[in-house]
Amino acid sequence: MNTYFETRNRILFLLEKHNLSIHALAINSGVAPSTIKNILYGKSQNPGIVTIKMLCDGFGISLFDFFDTEEFHSNELENI
Image (cartoon, rainbow, N blue to C red; front, side):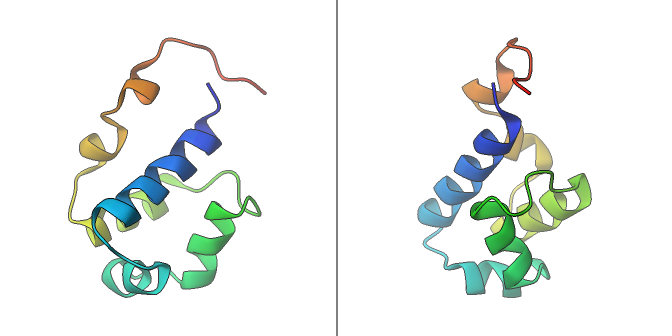
């Protein structure tokens, strides 16, 4: 499991699911568009939990909902 890629993919999935642009998510969440882009494009590979929580608020979901996927439930160790 690579937590960064799973987190990135989850954000991309939720953007599509909620039909939101990066700009709209930034407005909804209070996270700067540049921060969201840095996460999505690999410049920031270790987003903090507070940032993830703010993005969840922008999507209208809980942290539990964000991480409640098969990929995050995996027992695999982190690939470093």
